[in-house]
Length: 146
Image 1 (cartoon, rainbow, N blue to C red):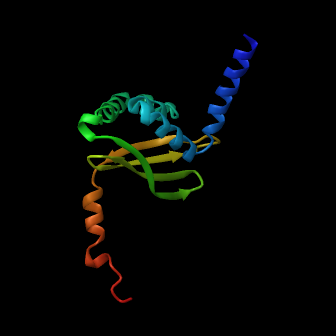
Image 2 (image 1 turned 135 degrees about the horizontal axis):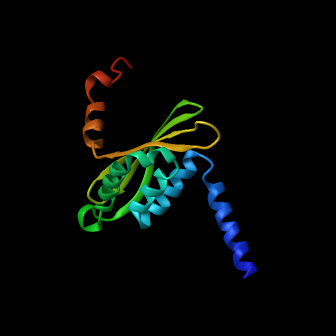
Image 3 (image 1 turned 180 degrees about the vertical axis):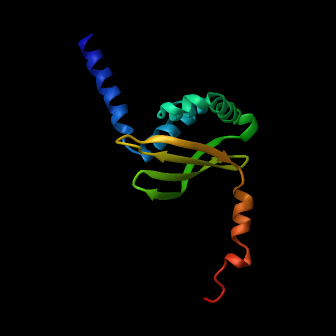
């Protein structure tokens, strides 16, 4: 019984320690996402007590990610970081490419550190990567004088 309690305490303290920063929260998110996408979203929002006020919106997002079944999106292959934008020491945005057979998606995470703990400020997902990459290839974005 003592051994079980010690193992439980170590695993709990390891989980709390692993969530020391935004990248750790994202890593935990994607670890859970692979097995249960809805649970991953729910746990991510649980980092911020203020998100209780938008429970209906969170439930819609959970419904969306739970709809990314293998029949609908094909096999899930993982994720890659697209970019990180640091606005200040307390506000940061992470953009990730999420890879499925059918098409890529983008997940955007915004984290905020009001005091000493990082919390999710917002989470969104979209499939507009094709139009954005096409737009970025237009002449007015290219450096033609080189």
